[in-house]
Amino acid sequence: MNGRPLPRAKIVCLTNGAFQENCYILGDEESGHAVLIDPGEDVNLFFRRIDTESLVLDAIWLTHAHVDHIAGVRESVERAGVPVYLHPDERVLYDRAAEQATWLGVAVQSPPTPDHELHHGQKLSVGGLQFEVRAVPGHSPGSVAFVGHGIAIVGDALFAGSIGRADLPGGDLHTLLASIRDQLMTLPDETVVYPGHGPDTTVGVERRGNPFLTGAARIV
Image (cartoon, rainbow, N blue to C red; front, side, top):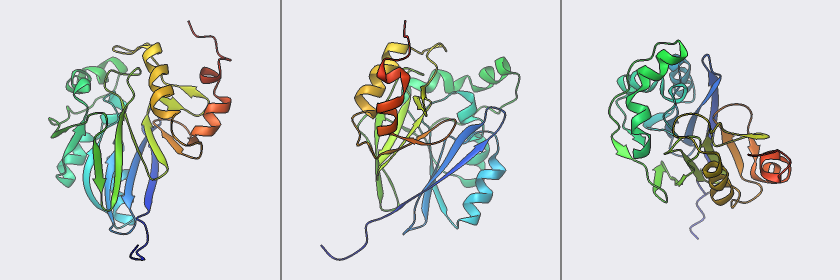
């Protein structure tokens, strides 16, 4: 041991847009480097906070490619010139962002081609922090979670007291439940879960009380 303090994760949740999507700024407090996770509609909000926190943006990580989570990707890339990371199984959704937006009655610029693919078990770094990519399909085919340093940023796989929708194109309920069981419920109870919508929670709280995981909710 050299006596140096362990790197500490800074996480800022910015709820934004018509769908009340949670965009996250994930940073290393020691180095000041950060990534933007799931930039939704309000890009000005995200970059004001990055400036306020005096962070250096290194990349954009995407949990999945539903339009509410990627609406601000193009503008964010144009502002910061950073690479985009996406699971390859999300490309069909990602490449149809403008079409998704039309279905929902909103306008979204088509995002740029992703620079890097995400894969299960991959290690990603931001400053002195390292996070593991965990595949959590079911809400969408290539949904992922970013896990490390006592936190899990899970997109729309798991919510406080609920789970993600599985009735959208590419979704599957039993796949989603298996993903949650095998990739999220295997984490320590104290792991803080940051979802794509709504408040944060912990693995332990969801293990004990989420009706979709305890069997209290009827699942067809």
